[in-house]
Image 1 (cartoon, rainbow over the protein chains, first blue to last red):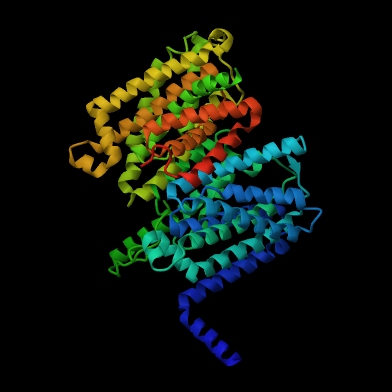
Image 2 (image 1 turned 180 degrees about the vertical axis):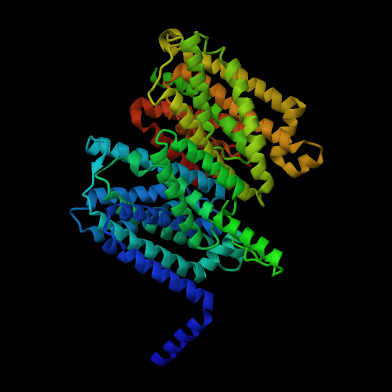
Length: 340
Length: 286
């Protein structure tokens, strides 16, 4: 019994190409560097900044997990992220921090499954409108509930230290990357991709279309809610406007598009790039930064529809053609569709 | 008496919602642009009206002559530069829908922040025709006048779409852009004009809104959401559906406000959710 399973494992590893093993190795090294960073450089500036990058990395990957292959544009990221905020505000203190984060993930999954079950039977654009509206709905409902029960607008959150939050967000980040990688290669991931290519054909080949969509949509929400619960402990005060901000829904989409969605490097690159740009604009032009940001968004959509990786691939193809190499690139062989 | 009151004020408010939503519906139904920044142009219309009124004493109804052409040209220019480019480069309609929505989100940022730099973030009120008519019914005159203007605008729009050559070209492009193009319709020009008309309706709605409601630079998004709900309620891309949906939402809004003033927004969503479950194609959808 034991022998066969180890033989299977060996065969499975042999199945991985060398490139894949190298990229996995690089990933592990990056994770280890990130993990020991606060010990080596306890300066809280970089720790805070990198946890900010990882937060948007989580949101962007969580978004790409579902919306990348299917092309269903979800704008509900802020809903799950904000739920995490409120979980932390209510439960952190009475319950240990780790339990709060895990519970947030569970609640995120349940709420996302409910939203998905309501809307994922419908055409893409209805889904987009509904998810857009659900964030504003939660904002209103929470405001109303707070008004009726506590009579106040916001809440105070029991804080965690910079380093605890950093390691927590790192763990969730690693979890997000690993789970997303596995899902993309699993039967579910392939099913999801075939749904994105041609939904009816996928249904006819025996895929339970609605269940697949709902489960993966809800899985993405787990990470978003966890990220919310962790980042809430870095603030002392939250209110519905902060928790359910439209920006949190749109930024991950833009980051994923900006970085490219063919693999997981793209969304993370996009997250780091956009967050860094935003930090720079906030400090350099505090009055006009949203304005400049909007201009940058439009320019990015106009001139880089396939993201940074798309530009890099085009450049690579150009160089290869010049040097007389093969013109086939992954993009031409049929890359993943950009979301609709 | 309360019931009659609610229905009258509801229809008057519903007229405004309908005007906002017809513009939104034209942009999506014909041009496939889910314009998240639609509400921002309502805000621009409202603030230009307010500015003309407070600094030059211009009658708000006359300022339609300024806001409508301005927003129409703005919409035409936006489509001719930004959305046309996206449309030509996108490999499929789905991708274009996604990218144009994100681009319009960028527009939302730009327009809202320019307005905030100019006018700040406080709330303004424009006092115009603040008395009531109708004897014991107490109908606010400014709302009645706004409704009258909406009916006139609606009639003009209906005539334009039904009878003129350009209107027919717009409707044809909404049904099937490729075939319309083959029949000799200049599809790029028509879509740009159509987008301009959509924004023009938003601008007019803004002007009228400034005469009846308080305005602020962050008011846009809530009307975008109202437009989205109304358009889903009536059927995506259906203009008559947008009118009916707008009036229904107006009445519901007044009904809920009568009992629980802060809950109207929540009530919209409940209708929205029920509708999505029961009839996702909307009232007038095919």
